[in-house]
Image (cartoon, rainbow, N blue to C red; front, side, top):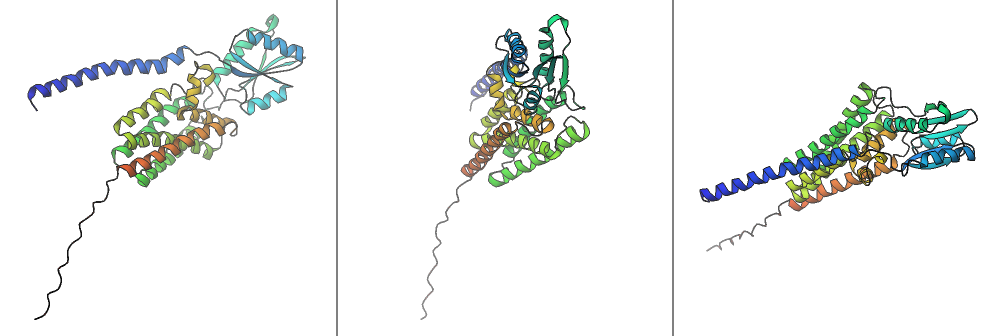
Length: 335
């Protein structure tokens, strides 16, 4: 290759890098900053309980926030509490002869709990104070949910690291699957020891939380490894796009999926980081209520990633070279 051709190739690569960096910056800012800048309630599930005339008045007040709330009617405060504990609604307004009570669940989302307090207080008549009861409080070690929301990115990075290392080391088939599963299990144990036992940011069953964290790392790591096994290095870039660039900001774990622009919240729920955040809240504070869907999403990603990893390893395995038959000379006859 001539010196001119070499210089031309180097110049093209330089221009490609210069053009790629602004595109990555723009995409990253769009993925992270746009949902945050457009945070607002959109069909946020909330309950209303009490006598029909009073409940209807509350509904009319909430309806003034067009498209913000999805109102569910309940017979009384006990039914509304049960709906909150089952994660069917984020909170409820209960009207009683003694006044209005707002039921919240800061464990589901401290941001939503604060939003509901503002919305209900704003429509209270005559400055009447609204009693607020936190039905499912956030863990004492993480009252604002900051630790839980901050834990998703390290989980995604741990899964990405596992998948990339498996790919770069050339592990295939069962060895790759075993390495991913082992790394995920250890990551789940270490993560729970830190978040639950040390920081007190999780308050549910220790082993259930470890299972969710481990399954999250496995889902993300196997996706990286599976894409890498099927399409090579571009697959690792695609994995980073799905799990890091989109999965983390689209998860809604820092606020709530219903506070993100449509269809960002829905997309985030189908990606491992968003499913992990929802499942972790369920097992940490709600005794596993509403964890089935998010766990199924994580399991499907993990199964698909492991299957792709094994299939890609079998496809890339070199076929055995057949050796030509060796001719054996016939024994010489005697005399």
